[in-house]
Amino acid sequence: MRQKGKQMIRNNNLFKNKNMKKTILAALMVLSTSAAFAGDSEPLKAILKAKTYDAAKALVEQNLSSLASDEERAKAYNKLVDLALEKVNKEQTIQLENQAAQQMGQAGDKPVDEEGLYQATANAMAAAMECNKYDQMPNAKGKVAPKFASKNADRLYNIRNQFINGGIFYQNKNDNDNAYKFLASYVDTADLPIFAKFNKAEDANLTNIAYYATIYAYQAKDWKNAERYVEYALKDPEKAKEALGLKFGILGAQLETHADSVAYAKKLEDMYAQDSNNDDILSFLTIIYSQLGQEEKAIAMLDSKLAGDPANHSANSIKGQLLKQKEDYDNAIVCLEKALPSAPNDQVKCTLNAALGECYFFKAQERVNNYKGVLSPAAREQFNVVYNKAIEYLEEARNLDLTGENKRLYAYPLYGAYYFVKGAEASETKAAAALAGVTQ
Image 1: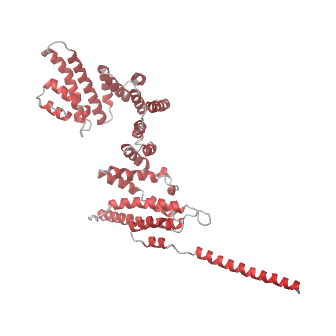
Image 2: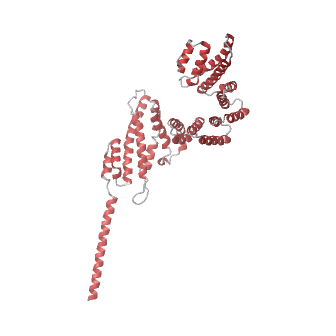
Image 3: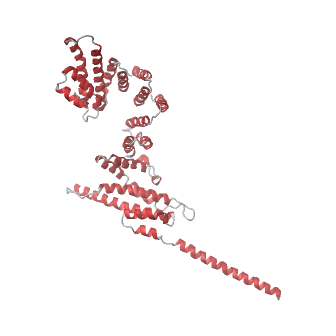
Protein backbone atom coordinates (compact mmCIF):
# COMPACT_ATOMS: atom_id res chain seq x y z
CA MET A 1 0.00 0.00 0.00
CA ARG A 2 2.74 2.34 0.93
CA GLN A 3 4.39 1.63 -2.38
CA LYS A 4 1.20 2.25 -4.35
CA GLY A 5 0.66 5.46 -2.55
CA LYS A 6 4.02 6.71 -3.55
CA GLN A 7 3.33 5.71 -7.12
CA MET A 8 0.02 7.56 -7.11
CA ILE A 9 1.68 10.64 -5.79
CA ARG A 10 4.24 10.53 -8.58
CA ASN A 11 1.49 10.07 -11.17
CA ASN A 12 -0.43 12.95 -9.69
CA ASN A 13 2.66 15.16 -9.90
CA LEU A 14 3.12 14.09 -13.48
CA PHE A 15 -0.47 15.07 -14.25
CA LYS A 16 0.09 18.46 -12.65
CA ASN A 17 3.30 19.00 -14.62
CA LYS A 18 1.53 18.23 -17.89
CA ASN A 19 -1.18 20.73 -17.05
CA MET A 20 1.46 23.29 -16.20
CA LYS A 21 3.16 22.75 -19.54
CA LYS A 22 -0.14 23.13 -21.37
CA THR A 23 -0.79 26.35 -19.50
CA ILE A 24 2.64 27.74 -20.38
CA LEU A 25 2.30 26.69 -24.03
CA ALA A 26 -1.11 28.28 -24.23
CA ALA A 27 0.23 31.51 -22.76
CA LEU A 28 3.13 31.54 -25.20
CA MET A 29 0.73 31.01 -28.09
CA VAL A 30 -1.35 33.93 -26.93
CA LEU A 31 1.73 36.12 -26.66
CA SER A 32 3.08 35.10 -30.04
CA THR A 33 -0.31 35.60 -31.64
CA SER A 34 -0.70 39.05 -30.16
CA ALA A 35 2.83 39.94 -31.25
CA ALA A 36 2.22 38.72 -34.78
CA PHE A 37 -1.00 40.64 -35.11
CA ALA A 38 -0.05 43.60 -32.96
CA GLY A 39 -1.28 46.89 -34.31
CA ASP A 40 0.78 49.99 -34.87
CA SER A 41 2.05 51.78 -31.80
CA GLU A 42 0.23 54.94 -30.76
CA PRO A 43 3.10 57.23 -31.91
CA LEU A 44 3.08 55.56 -35.33
CA LYS A 45 -0.70 55.85 -35.60
CA ALA A 46 -0.40 59.59 -34.99
CA ILE A 47 2.27 59.89 -37.69
CA LEU A 48 0.21 57.92 -40.22
CA LYS A 49 -2.81 60.14 -39.58
CA ALA A 50 -0.87 63.35 -40.31
CA LYS A 51 -2.18 65.25 -43.31
CA THR A 52 0.88 67.37 -44.17
CA TYR A 53 4.58 66.70 -44.56
CA ASP A 54 5.56 69.28 -41.95
CA ALA A 55 3.16 67.86 -39.34
CA ALA A 56 4.31 64.30 -39.97
CA LYS A 57 7.97 65.30 -39.92
CA ALA A 58 7.54 67.00 -36.55
CA LEU A 59 5.88 63.89 -35.13
CA VAL A 60 8.62 61.63 -36.49
CA GLU A 61 11.32 63.77 -34.94
CA GLN A 62 9.49 63.88 -31.60
CA ASN A 63 8.67 60.17 -31.43
CA LEU A 64 11.41 58.36 -33.34
CA SER A 65 12.88 56.71 -30.24
CA SER A 66 9.39 55.80 -29.01
CA LEU A 67 8.49 53.78 -32.08
CA ALA A 68 8.27 50.07 -31.35
CA SER A 69 10.77 48.79 -33.95
CA ASP A 70 12.87 49.53 -36.98
CA GLU A 71 9.93 48.35 -39.05
CA GLU A 72 7.80 51.10 -37.53
CA ARG A 73 10.54 53.65 -38.15
CA ALA A 74 10.71 52.61 -41.80
CA LYS A 75 6.94 52.90 -42.03
CA ALA A 76 7.02 56.36 -40.44
CA TYR A 77 9.62 57.66 -42.89
CA ASN A 78 7.75 56.11 -45.78
CA LYS A 79 4.77 58.23 -44.73
CA LEU A 80 7.01 61.29 -45.14
CA VAL A 81 7.92 60.09 -48.63
CA ASP A 82 4.22 59.74 -49.48
CA LEU A 83 3.38 63.23 -48.25
CA ALA A 84 6.36 64.87 -50.00
CA LEU A 85 5.47 63.14 -53.24
CA GLU A 86 1.90 64.40 -52.99
CA LYS A 87 3.32 67.92 -53.31
CA VAL A 88 5.64 66.90 -56.14
CA ASN A 89 2.80 65.24 -58.05
CA LYS A 90 0.48 68.18 -57.50
CA GLU A 91 2.90 70.73 -58.95
CA GLN A 92 4.00 68.44 -61.78
CA THR A 93 0.38 67.90 -62.72
CA ILE A 94 -0.16 71.66 -63.00
CA GLN A 95 2.95 71.94 -65.16
CA LEU A 96 1.64 69.23 -67.50
CA GLU A 97 -1.77 70.88 -67.66
CA ASN A 98 -0.13 74.20 -68.58
CA GLN A 99 1.93 72.54 -71.30
CA ALA A 100 -1.11 70.78 -72.72
CA ALA A 101 -3.10 74.02 -72.73
CA GLN A 102 -0.28 75.92 -74.44
CA GLN A 103 -0.04 73.27 -77.14
CA MET A 104 -3.74 73.84 -77.78
CA GLY A 105 -3.20 77.59 -78.10
CA GLN A 106 -4.57 78.41 -74.66
CA ALA A 107 -2.95 80.47 -71.93
CA GLY A 108 -1.74 77.59 -69.80
CA ASP A 109 -0.69 79.88 -66.99
CA LYS A 110 -1.89 78.18 -63.82
CA PRO A 111 0.52 79.16 -61.01
CA VAL A 112 3.15 76.57 -60.13
CA ASP A 113 4.90 76.56 -56.78
CA GLU A 114 8.36 75.84 -58.20
CA GLU A 115 10.27 76.31 -54.97
CA GLY A 116 7.77 74.07 -53.22
CA LEU A 117 8.18 71.47 -55.94
CA TYR A 118 11.98 71.40 -55.64
CA GLN A 119 11.96 71.39 -51.85
CA ALA A 120 9.40 68.57 -51.83
CA THR A 121 11.68 66.59 -54.15
CA ALA A 122 14.54 67.05 -51.71
CA ASN A 123 12.28 66.12 -48.79
CA ALA A 124 11.06 62.97 -50.51
CA MET A 125 14.61 61.88 -51.29
CA ALA A 126 15.87 62.54 -47.76
CA ALA A 127 12.92 60.70 -46.19
CA ALA A 128 13.39 57.76 -48.55
CA MET A 129 17.02 57.43 -47.48
CA GLU A 130 16.00 57.27 -43.82
CA CYS A 131 13.21 54.84 -44.67
CA ASN A 132 15.67 52.62 -46.51
CA LYS A 133 18.10 52.70 -43.58
CA TYR A 134 15.52 51.19 -41.22
CA ASP A 135 13.97 49.05 -43.96
CA GLN A 136 17.29 47.23 -44.34
CA MET A 137 17.54 46.36 -40.64
CA PRO A 138 17.02 42.71 -39.60
CA ASN A 139 13.51 41.97 -38.34
CA ALA A 140 12.57 40.04 -35.20
CA LYS A 141 13.58 36.80 -36.92
CA GLY A 142 16.96 38.20 -37.86
CA LYS A 143 16.09 38.47 -41.54
CA VAL A 144 16.32 41.50 -43.80
CA ALA A 145 13.03 41.80 -45.62
CA PRO A 146 12.66 45.36 -46.97
CA LYS A 147 9.11 46.44 -47.65
CA PHE A 148 9.59 49.88 -49.22
CA ALA A 149 12.93 49.86 -51.06
CA SER A 150 11.78 48.71 -54.49
CA LYS A 151 8.70 50.93 -54.66
CA ASN A 152 10.58 53.99 -53.45
CA ALA A 153 13.43 53.38 -55.88
CA ASP A 154 11.03 53.36 -58.82
CA ARG A 155 9.02 56.41 -57.86
CA LEU A 156 11.96 58.53 -56.70
CA TYR A 157 14.41 57.79 -59.50
CA ASN A 158 11.94 59.27 -61.94
CA ILE A 159 11.84 62.63 -60.18
CA ARG A 160 15.64 63.11 -59.89
CA ASN A 161 15.50 65.47 -62.88
CA GLN A 162 13.76 67.97 -60.60
CA PHE A 163 17.17 68.46 -58.95
CA ILE A 164 18.44 69.74 -62.30
CA ASN A 165 15.41 71.99 -62.72
CA GLY A 166 15.89 73.25 -59.18
CA GLY A 167 19.56 74.01 -59.83
CA ILE A 168 18.67 76.04 -62.92
CA PHE A 169 15.85 77.79 -61.06
CA TYR A 170 18.13 78.96 -58.26
CA GLN A 171 20.93 79.75 -60.68
CA ASN A 172 18.61 82.18 -62.45
CA LYS A 173 17.85 83.75 -59.07
CA ASN A 174 21.60 84.15 -58.41
CA ASP A 175 21.22 81.89 -55.37
CA ASN A 176 24.47 79.98 -55.74
CA ASP A 177 24.12 78.07 -52.49
CA ASN A 178 20.84 76.45 -53.51
CA ALA A 179 21.93 76.06 -57.13
CA TYR A 180 24.91 74.06 -55.85
CA LYS A 181 22.76 72.10 -53.42
CA PHE A 182 20.33 70.89 -56.07
CA LEU A 183 22.83 70.16 -58.83
CA ALA A 184 25.04 68.31 -56.35
CA SER A 185 22.01 66.33 -55.16
CA TYR A 186 21.48 65.04 -58.68
CA VAL A 187 25.03 63.67 -58.72
CA ASP A 188 24.94 62.43 -55.12
CA THR A 189 21.73 60.47 -55.58
CA ALA A 190 23.19 58.55 -58.52
CA ASP A 191 25.34 56.64 -56.03
CA LEU A 192 22.64 55.81 -53.50
CA PRO A 193 22.26 52.09 -52.71
CA ILE A 194 18.51 52.31 -53.22
CA PHE A 195 19.15 53.08 -56.91
CA ALA A 196 21.68 50.28 -57.45
CA LYS A 197 19.42 48.55 -59.97
CA PHE A 198 19.61 51.53 -62.34
CA ASN A 199 22.56 51.75 -64.75
CA LYS A 200 24.43 55.03 -64.24
CA ALA A 201 25.97 54.67 -67.70
CA GLU A 202 22.50 55.27 -69.15
CA ASP A 203 22.08 58.55 -67.23
CA ALA A 204 22.63 61.05 -70.04
CA ASN A 205 22.71 64.04 -67.68
CA LEU A 206 25.06 62.77 -64.97
CA THR A 207 28.47 63.78 -66.32
CA ASN A 208 27.29 67.17 -67.56
CA ILE A 209 25.59 68.08 -64.28
CA ALA A 210 28.65 66.82 -62.42
CA TYR A 211 30.74 69.38 -64.31
CA TYR A 212 28.61 72.27 -63.06
CA ALA A 213 28.45 70.79 -59.57
CA THR A 214 32.26 70.73 -59.65
CA ILE A 215 32.38 74.42 -60.48
CA TYR A 216 30.09 75.28 -57.58
CA ALA A 217 32.07 72.99 -55.26
CA TYR A 218 35.28 74.72 -56.36
CA GLN A 219 33.81 78.14 -55.70
CA ALA A 220 32.63 76.98 -52.27
CA LYS A 221 36.08 75.43 -51.57
CA ASP A 222 34.30 72.16 -50.93
CA TRP A 223 37.37 70.24 -52.06
CA LYS A 224 36.27 66.77 -50.99
CA ASN A 225 33.11 66.87 -53.08
CA ALA A 226 34.80 68.79 -55.89
CA GLU A 227 37.29 65.95 -56.30
CA ARG A 228 34.43 63.45 -56.39
CA TYR A 229 32.26 65.35 -58.86
CA VAL A 230 35.11 66.11 -61.26
CA GLU A 231 35.74 62.39 -61.80
CA TYR A 232 32.24 62.14 -63.27
CA ALA A 233 32.75 65.35 -65.26
CA LEU A 234 35.92 63.96 -66.85
CA LYS A 235 33.73 61.33 -68.55
CA ASP A 236 31.64 63.96 -70.31
CA PRO A 237 32.64 64.02 -74.01
CA GLU A 238 31.98 67.75 -74.36
CA LYS A 239 33.36 68.93 -71.01
CA ALA A 240 36.34 66.59 -70.51
CA LYS A 241 38.94 69.22 -71.39
CA GLU A 242 37.46 71.85 -69.08
CA ALA A 243 36.96 69.22 -66.39
CA LEU A 244 40.63 68.30 -66.51
CA GLY A 245 41.51 71.94 -65.99
CA LEU A 246 39.15 72.00 -63.03
CA LYS A 247 40.78 68.91 -61.60
CA PHE A 248 44.20 70.52 -61.72
CA GLY A 249 42.77 73.69 -60.23
CA ILE A 250 41.14 71.76 -57.39
CA LEU A 251 44.38 69.98 -56.57
CA GLY A 252 46.42 73.15 -56.90
CA ALA A 253 44.10 75.18 -54.69
CA GLN A 254 44.75 72.82 -51.79
CA LEU A 255 48.51 73.26 -51.80
CA GLU A 256 49.59 74.70 -48.47
CA THR A 257 53.28 73.86 -48.15
CA HIS A 258 56.32 73.63 -50.37
CA ALA A 259 56.19 69.86 -49.95
CA ASP A 260 52.59 69.86 -51.23
CA SER A 261 53.68 71.74 -54.34
CA VAL A 262 56.61 69.42 -54.99
CA ALA A 263 54.34 66.38 -54.65
CA TYR A 264 51.79 68.01 -56.97
CA ALA A 265 54.51 68.69 -59.56
CA LYS A 266 55.61 65.06 -59.38
CA LYS A 267 52.04 63.91 -59.94
CA LEU A 268 51.77 66.16 -62.99
CA GLU A 269 55.13 64.95 -64.31
CA ASP A 270 53.90 61.37 -64.15
CA MET A 271 50.68 62.31 -65.95
CA TYR A 272 52.61 64.21 -68.64
CA ALA A 273 54.96 61.26 -69.17
CA GLN A 274 51.90 59.16 -70.00
CA ASP A 275 50.24 61.83 -72.17
CA SER A 276 52.84 64.21 -73.58
CA ASN A 277 50.36 65.60 -76.13
CA ASN A 278 48.11 66.95 -73.41
CA ASP A 279 48.62 70.71 -73.39
CA ASP A 280 46.53 71.14 -70.26
CA ILE A 281 48.91 69.00 -68.22
CA LEU A 282 51.84 70.89 -69.76
CA SER A 283 50.26 74.21 -68.79
CA PHE A 284 49.66 73.28 -65.18
CA LEU A 285 53.07 71.65 -64.84
CA THR A 286 54.93 74.73 -66.09
CA ILE A 287 52.82 76.96 -63.87
CA ILE A 288 53.67 74.90 -60.78
CA TYR A 289 57.36 74.96 -61.78
CA SER A 290 57.13 78.74 -61.89
CA GLN A 291 55.48 78.86 -58.48
CA LEU A 292 58.31 76.69 -57.13
CA GLY A 293 60.86 79.17 -58.49
CA GLN A 294 61.89 76.77 -61.26
CA GLU A 295 61.19 79.07 -64.23
CA GLU A 296 64.19 77.81 -66.19
CA LYS A 297 62.91 74.23 -65.89
CA ALA A 298 59.49 75.38 -67.07
CA ILE A 299 60.93 77.28 -70.05
CA ALA A 300 63.10 74.31 -71.00
CA MET A 301 60.03 72.07 -71.06
CA LEU A 302 58.16 74.62 -73.19
CA ASP A 303 61.10 74.93 -75.59
CA SER A 304 61.10 71.16 -75.97
CA LYS A 305 57.42 71.29 -76.87
CA LEU A 306 57.89 74.17 -79.31
CA ALA A 307 60.77 72.41 -81.04
CA GLY A 308 58.31 69.83 -82.31
CA ASP A 309 55.30 72.15 -82.56
CA PRO A 310 56.38 75.79 -83.09
CA ALA A 311 52.80 77.09 -83.35
CA ASN A 312 51.55 75.38 -80.18
CA HIS A 313 49.19 77.85 -78.56
CA SER A 314 49.60 76.79 -74.94
CA ALA A 315 53.39 76.59 -75.06
CA ASN A 316 53.74 80.01 -76.73
CA SER A 317 51.21 81.62 -74.39
CA ILE A 318 52.77 80.27 -71.20
CA LYS A 319 56.33 80.94 -72.31
CA GLY A 320 55.37 84.49 -73.24
CA GLN A 321 53.84 85.08 -69.80
CA LEU A 322 56.89 83.62 -68.06
CA LEU A 323 59.28 85.77 -70.10
CA LYS A 324 57.16 88.85 -69.34
CA GLN A 325 57.54 88.11 -65.62
CA LYS A 326 61.31 87.87 -66.19
CA GLU A 327 61.10 91.30 -67.91
CA ASP A 328 62.40 89.81 -71.16
CA TYR A 329 59.84 91.83 -73.09
CA ASP A 330 61.12 91.38 -76.65
CA ASN A 331 61.14 87.59 -76.48
CA ALA A 332 57.86 87.60 -74.57
CA ILE A 333 56.27 89.62 -77.39
CA VAL A 334 57.45 87.09 -79.99
CA CYS A 335 55.78 84.21 -78.10
CA LEU A 336 52.58 86.06 -77.27
CA GLU A 337 52.10 87.24 -80.85
CA LYS A 338 52.45 83.63 -82.02
CA ALA A 339 49.83 82.53 -79.51
CA LEU A 340 47.26 85.25 -80.27
CA PRO A 341 45.91 83.98 -83.64
CA SER A 342 44.96 80.61 -82.15
CA ALA A 343 43.27 81.99 -79.02
CA PRO A 344 40.15 79.83 -78.53
CA ASN A 345 37.82 82.52 -77.16
CA ASP A 346 37.48 86.21 -76.28
CA GLN A 347 38.57 85.62 -72.70
CA VAL A 348 41.92 84.25 -73.85
CA LYS A 349 42.22 86.94 -76.54
CA CYS A 350 41.66 89.59 -73.88
CA THR A 351 44.38 88.10 -71.67
CA LEU A 352 46.91 87.85 -74.52
CA ASN A 353 46.21 91.37 -75.78
CA ALA A 354 46.61 92.71 -72.26
CA ALA A 355 49.90 90.84 -71.85
CA LEU A 356 51.21 92.16 -75.17
CA GLY A 357 50.12 95.69 -74.23
CA GLU A 358 51.94 95.38 -70.91
CA CYS A 359 55.11 94.21 -72.63
CA TYR A 360 55.12 97.19 -74.99
CA PHE A 361 54.25 99.59 -72.17
CA PHE A 362 57.03 98.42 -69.85
CA LYS A 363 59.45 98.26 -72.79
CA ALA A 364 58.65 101.94 -73.51
CA GLN A 365 58.97 102.81 -69.82
CA GLU A 366 62.42 101.24 -69.71
CA ARG A 367 63.53 103.31 -72.67
CA VAL A 368 62.24 106.52 -71.11
CA ASN A 369 63.88 105.74 -67.77
CA ASN A 370 67.21 104.97 -69.46
CA TYR A 371 67.15 108.12 -71.60
CA LYS A 372 69.81 110.63 -70.66
CA GLY A 373 69.20 114.33 -70.90
CA VAL A 374 66.20 116.42 -71.85
CA LEU A 375 63.53 114.51 -73.73
CA SER A 376 63.59 115.94 -77.25
CA PRO A 377 60.58 115.95 -79.60
CA ALA A 378 62.36 113.42 -81.82
CA ALA A 379 63.03 111.10 -78.87
CA ARG A 380 59.46 111.49 -77.66
CA GLU A 381 58.21 110.51 -81.10
CA GLN A 382 60.33 107.34 -80.97
CA PHE A 383 58.93 106.48 -77.57
CA ASN A 384 55.40 107.20 -78.78
CA VAL A 385 55.75 104.49 -81.40
CA VAL A 386 56.18 101.89 -78.66
CA TYR A 387 53.55 103.45 -76.39
CA ASN A 388 51.06 103.51 -79.26
CA LYS A 389 51.73 99.83 -79.89
CA ALA A 390 50.92 99.23 -76.23
CA ILE A 391 47.74 101.30 -76.57
CA GLU A 392 46.69 99.26 -79.62
CA TYR A 393 46.80 95.98 -77.69
CA LEU A 394 45.45 97.39 -74.43
CA GLU A 395 42.45 98.98 -76.13
CA GLU A 396 41.70 95.67 -77.82
CA ALA A 397 41.83 93.95 -74.43
CA ARG A 398 39.43 96.55 -73.03
CA ASN A 399 37.05 96.08 -75.98
CA LEU A 400 37.04 92.31 -75.51
CA ASP A 401 36.34 92.64 -71.78
CA LEU A 402 32.61 93.31 -72.08
CA THR A 403 31.91 92.83 -68.35
CA GLY A 404 34.96 94.70 -67.06
CA GLU A 405 35.98 91.71 -64.98
CA ASN A 406 39.54 91.73 -66.34
CA LYS A 407 40.30 95.45 -66.17
CA ARG A 408 43.12 94.76 -63.73
CA LEU A 409 45.02 93.28 -66.68
CA TYR A 410 44.98 96.40 -68.86
CA ALA A 411 43.55 99.46 -67.08
CA TYR A 412 46.69 100.83 -65.40
CA PRO A 413 49.14 100.37 -68.31
CA LEU A 414 46.52 101.88 -70.65
CA TYR A 415 46.30 104.92 -68.38
CA GLY A 416 50.12 105.20 -68.30
CA ALA A 417 50.42 104.93 -72.08
CA TYR A 418 47.70 107.55 -72.65
CA TYR A 419 49.33 109.84 -70.10
CA PHE A 420 52.66 109.78 -71.93
CA VAL A 421 51.25 110.07 -75.47
CA LYS A 422 48.18 112.28 -75.01
CA GLY A 423 48.83 114.10 -71.76
CA ALA A 424 47.06 114.24 -68.40
CA GLU A 425 44.12 116.33 -69.61
CA ALA A 426 43.13 114.18 -72.55
CA SER A 427 39.68 112.62 -72.27
CA GLU A 428 41.14 109.18 -72.98
CA THR A 429 43.64 109.59 -70.15
CA LYS A 430 40.97 110.67 -67.67
CA ALA A 431 38.67 107.79 -68.67
CA ALA A 432 41.53 105.31 -68.28
CA ALA A 433 42.41 106.83 -64.88
CA ALA A 434 38.83 106.26 -63.71
CA LEU A 435 38.94 102.71 -65.03
CA ALA A 436 42.19 102.04 -63.19
CA GLY A 437 41.02 103.78 -60.01
CA VAL A 438 43.79 106.39 -60.24
CA THR A 439 43.31 109.85 -58.76
CA GLN A 440 44.96 112.45 -61.00
